[in-house]
Image (tube, rainbow, N blue to C red; front, side):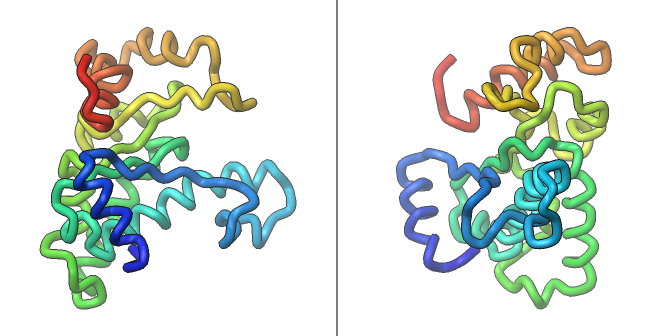
Length: 187
């Protein structure tokens, strides 16, 4: 939400390209959790989703999606299960303390469900059907995370395609259509 980044958001909006967020080690400030833990188990499991939560709070709360009404953003490789909780929590704070986020004209969850915010899912996330119900079927994109150690390669796409708890339409959206919309690609 930093104003120094507004020219980047403006240019992305003008070019009709998304801004995507991803956690990274060795950055400043250091990823969430790394100030408390020196064990990769903790720093990796905490860093990715918590950094996405921090970025989403800032982008939404600082009014970036209000200031740049055609900008699309994506929060990638932190899973998707945290998003319904986070939208609800941000909405609760907005309900009671909206004066602290004066650029917002509606609750944070409305921006998150606006069709301009995307998150990536892990193929094995059990909570995925609930995520789709809460934030919309068009908001979730597939991320293989290849070639990292924690990816389900070469079966992550098959894992999603074979899920009985997702409709064929939801699978098509996650595996193809939502990414085409995010990146404005023709299919």
